[in-house]
Structures are given as C-alpha cells and as structure tokens.
Amino acid sequence: KTTSFVFDPPLVRDLDYTMEVIDSSVAKLTLKATRRWRSDNVPGPLKIKRLNTGAGELRIDAKFGGVTVAEVQADLGAHGVTVETTDDKRLYQSSPKLTILGHGFNESGINGANTLRWANSLRGKGVNYTIT
Image (cartoon, rainbow, N blue to C red):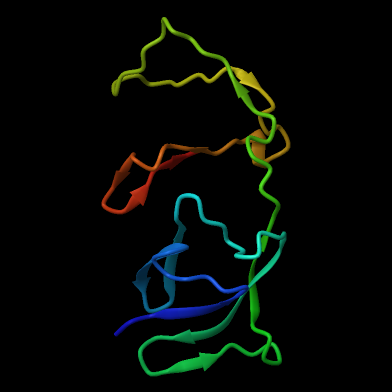
C-alpha cells in the first residue's frame, strides 16, 4: 500500500518533500533542500485536502477546504544570527560539551532553547540529526 496526501497549496512528494510512514497513524515529512512548504512562497496555512492510504482518496472535510496542519512563516534567511569563528578549537566525538558563541540567538524560546540543524550530509538511517 502507498500513502499519499493532497496539499493546498500543492506539494509534490519526492520533489518538494519525502515521506516516511512510521505506523498506521504517523507519517514523517521532511522538506527537501531548496524547496518550500508553500509552493506559492507566501506565508499562510498549509492544508491537507485529501488522504490516500491505499483504498482511494478520502476527502479531509472542514467543509471541503481541508484541515490546516501548519502555519508556514516567511523565510527570513539567517534571521540575523551570527556565529563567531574559533580556528584554534577542535571538537571530538568524546567532547562532553559544545559551546557556540555569537549574536542573535533565540532567547524567548522554551527555556531560551535554540535548535541546531546539522548539514543534510549528517544523516543516519534516514534521520537528519537535530540537537537542542
């Protein structure tokens, strides 16, 4: 069986995103490099209009307009974040701590947390490793 979604605005599987079906109630979608969650490149809702789990398309109601699964924000580039270079520092697998110096980090998030996303080349078993 193949699972598929119909999005509004439209997105194309394997062109805009990849999908991994975890179990019968969970699917993990990953945006591909250089692609956007809204094909019209405008901030706003991303909706699922139809779902197909192998038995044909099922309309996701909300009176036929679909349901909002995300509120896509404008792409703000680097968001004003700068990181200081330290040529003399090396980080090894056994290092217990990573310190990042710079400006513009999020201080208003959950416990002031920032999310680091490593380059797409740091993958293992289909996972893009992220640390907070």
